Image (tube, rainbow, N blue to C red; front, side):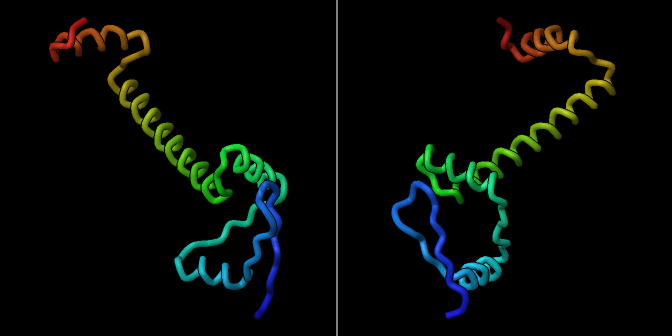
Length: 109
């Protein structure tokens, strides 16, 4: 049945066996690319997965999600900084602007 490999993941009971080609074909059919992760980062992900009682796949999914959210935040912050510069605003203007906005919208403290 083609190439069969047994992978042992620390912290898991026993060995998980699966056919490499079958897994590769499953990824390709779903339009996904199986990740190739070198030794040290993979070992770290396995450690985190054990500590958090998650699968390695869940750790990778969470890491990608955090990266994407961080990237979005950085782009939003850059946009806000550029807009502030275009209006000639500085960080020193922020407390005054907050006070004005609260007064205008009836949320004065």
